[in-house]
Length: 209
Image (cartoon, rainbow, N blue to C red; front, top):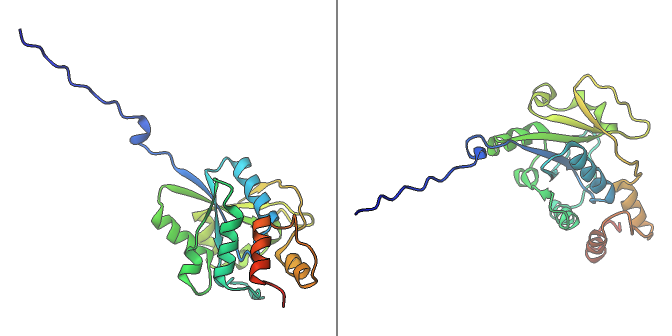
């Protein structure tokens, strides 16, 4: 008597037929240097909006009229890499530095969407930057491509002609300008930046002049 072998049917999970879209937070900036204020904001936005991860995007040349005096992109990228290494939900992307030239957010988002069409992007901006959005390059197209996340800051306006997702973050009065000034004055920057970033700054002799 012959036996009939019943074929085994492997049931594929539903997600295979309709992959869930990723929700990615983007934190751009010069990071000159990266400091603990950046990290607190990133973690709060990640948590409050339930995002999959936060991507840090160091710029090459900021498109501001008042150009910031930044050290080499190599050092800035290294400090970001070191500073976020202990958070599995943080990621570094050097797209703007690799592209060179002036770093326009529109160009960056367009390239990211082409590379990752399965992702929705949430671009983080400080409360003090929201009022400058009308001056951003191709802002009308940009607001249709990403969701802007505004971080509330003391004294900053919370009104905008563009749709903004506002997130409450503890007020931490730390800036890269303050840190550079402290270093020039020979003051401690402990607790202002991650210890590993402070060690790198000291080792490389950054911001002393």
